[in-house]
Length: 482
Image 1: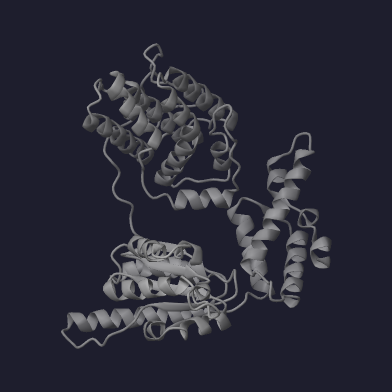
Image 2: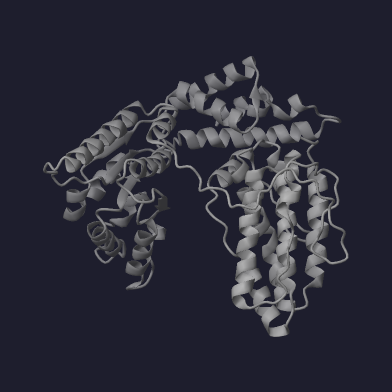
């Protein structure tokens, strides 16, 4: 492996290439669209490249924040945000500016969209090379995306299809400091040093097994009762399936759930895991989680709520529809509230798709009980309740350590002890505004901001300086007083 490129070098190469390409776009509307949309699209593709390689490190945050063109906003993400984006990368989506580019080519008889495919390919290879090499899985992802763009050009009838960039030339070769083609004829190609072909699309991502998902569930902090309830539910589903295969009667069973508890207790995390678990045991065909609240279901005009709720149901088919703060749908003070319309559409969707849709409603314990009793249909379909307890002081401290480790920050023994004591105080003084893990995240983000100010004042900070969180960064005295 060669030495990785610096974030500054990545930015320089990206900015120069994208700026040069933008200047070549003849159609003014396409040029404006490209300038506005290209950076966000390319950052999304960078997440796809790194998702294919599964090689995320805290340094990738610097590379991600370097992907922007002159005059456009500079991105600023934390490691946990980028890790979530990379982990949650879904699929390559054709950008709108490229569709406009193809249309302009057809109207003008040009070939700008074909040239963009080469530029796009080389930029993705640039992102793949930030760790010093281009892996075969990364190259396979780049090829698949470039093929999608080329296929769209071909289907639309844009002339000028050529051999394009040979991605295999870049696999496992030295990439730092090498000249990169921009897709312009006058540019020289990078000297090839093939190390094996990578033209095949990588195989579909391996789905996690039930055992892996249960291990992930067990790895969550606290939630002992919830974990036991989930495992009991899985056993129920597995035995039900065995009875079906044996030709034995299978009584009707509702798998819809009510999650009760305060904010920040892991309800969404468990719901996402449950969606995958339901898929692993064959209950759901896809296993995705679609998360909404009242605003995602209810509109302000007669008839629009039904359409909006139905859209959410359709999107969740094959997976789990997770409705947070579901009690907001049942407004007891207004009989004409549109939330009731959303409930009726929701109940119909649950009945029509009972074999491939699970609905989980979540919210505060007392309010959720009132919600379920607000409609007889809800009572008959939701008969399984999971209660999420507040995290205690030790668990809050453990969550904080986990967040620090995941984001590449370290705590010395003194700081760790002080943080644990502070979280115990936070738990002991909790009130109705207590946010559990959300409060931990707020403490972490505030500490990171203070640490950044402290480290920025250093003349030559070392790696350990960049990683260390101190008692001063935690600002515990202010936190206790507040």
